[in-house]
Length: 126
Image 1 (cartoon, rainbow, N blue to C red):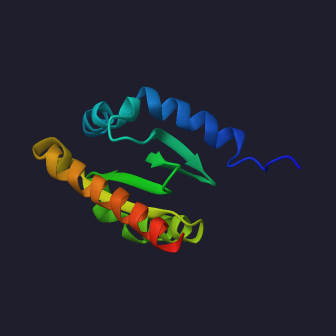
Image 2: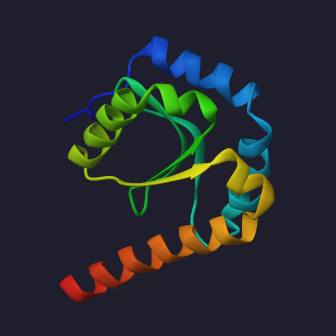
């Protein structure tokens, strides 16, 4: 049985455009996530349904979003996105761009902690 597409062609095309126009904070975090540096594969500007997330780790279902000042004005939209991802079984982490730029190590520790918590829960259910 063929798998249903995870998104529309239009959304997928937009994700390609976003990959080429990453923000400085996205580029900085991607430099630490790419090539399985944290032990897991991450995707950048990944389409899920009608949304594009900044980073996604399929193995643990972890969505990472980086927020700039524009997110102060779109709180309701961000809540809808978060609810959608949770309904898809994803966990979500949000960081401010300034946190990534000023203290990347703290951001990486939080990501590793979320990954470890997922692994612990998975091992407990086995």
